[in-house]
Length: 349
View 1 (cartoon, rainbow, N blue to C red):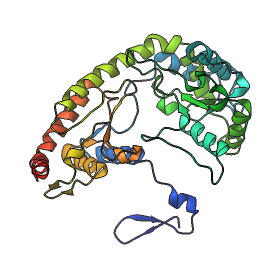
View 2: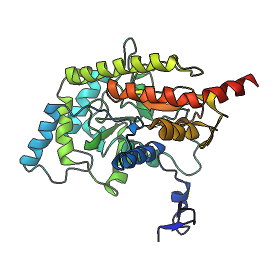
View 3: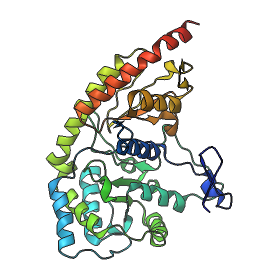
View 4: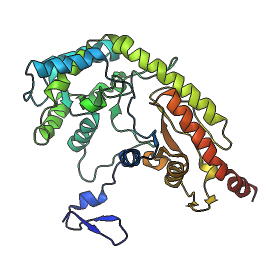
């Protein structure tokens, strides 16, 4: 058996499994997203603002390229590193948009940027190596949000900095900017010996990415510089949503917030509410308890900040319509009425 029951309804890992499994924590983002989905299916009107998933459909030109690939019978294995077509297109994109020069043999196409990151860590790091990870956590040069930025902010690829090309593994993908989360397509660019090592790992695990997704990826890169109008239209909507939520959150008592210059997340500090007790719920002793409180009382699914290295905060995705965000923040504001008296008393003491 892979799981046992502890008697309290909580599944426990079988101790015969590898210690690596016991040491590995599930993704809180995915766990909360799955819970919100299950509640919705059960009829609970939960608003999911946990997953970093655009609410837009994949642009038509990209979708049509995928459909055409299926109809043309382009449904077989591709080379492990990706087709020459998409790797050449990625090299062109990196040169034109990022000022980075690579050849196709320095590109590895994978099943999403997460796989790229995992393979890079496995290829580069050995037992006993020290890995320095700043909090909030970022690994390698993850540039998947490069096009979702708000002026005057500008994106700079880490590998373009003086002396850093040889020392940098650049990870990118199609999920965020092109609204292609379900297509599962990402890529890694770096010095050939590193990329070859990552490719060796991939060849013994998943092998190459979906042939259909690769055709769609080529179409995405053909839209024009930075995705052209298809991407800029989405970014404009994200900025409107950011500005709306920032205004509402900054008006909440005890909430501190830095205005993000890119992506589609807010990371507000709600720690002034910690230590308060809610009748029938319990004590708000950190970001995880606060997110459980919002899920139960406001029916809004958010991600605890401790998943990203800062327990004072919670993560809110604004990759949702303005109407959805308006309902969510109204629910959150109303639920905080249950905490304010206790929070005020706590601060007074």
